[in-house]
Image 1 (cartoon, rainbow, N blue to C red):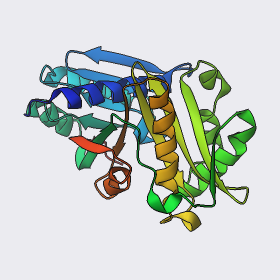
Image 2 (image 1 turned 180 degrees about the horizontal axis):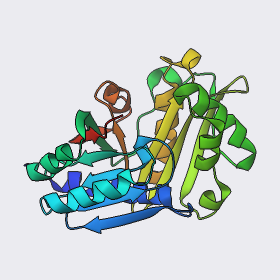
Image 3 (image 1 turned 90 degrees about the vertical axis):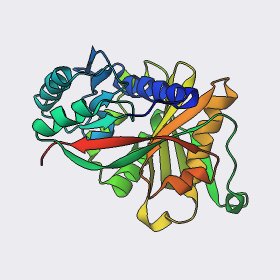
Length: 257
């Protein structure tokens, strides 16, 4: 059980707050807290948006089992994300509930304006902040990048959620064709970045880096203190290339299929 540093704590709190922001204004969304633990249900399909968070060393086994049962009863996919300070007894309780270790995810943050990838400075990519007229374009990128269904994309782009404020989408196009996107959620002094996706035919060109940098830059330019995201180890170098740093590795456990 590790003791986190102040930057890691700042980033973790910012990321959790941004995840709560994803749930803002969504019918049926809920969150339940216990010491050292948070269960969050946004109602969005997909594990990145719903889960049990191990926050610190105050988490108890019985509370973890209770919150896991509540999430399982929702019928929506979810996972557990446990900070290094989460007691091993919480892991054991979740294993007893049938969850299994999947991998580590990296909590990454940037506290200053991100770098612009050198090869993007003369790119044909055009980036902009989106409005309602761009929802179909975003949905097309999400579908190609992640296999997101139109119904799920519609939930992500719900006007009831977006009108609550604090969420904006960034879109990148090449010759008018949507190729990359990212969702940015403001929470407190942090901006959380989610759903960074690029269509298969446009990968490897730095477009994901560029749209992520734009989302972070917009938040930091408004006076926010940091931009945060989570990434698998396989893609962390993409974000390191624009200045993000790994501050913690979170253990990820998933329910049985």
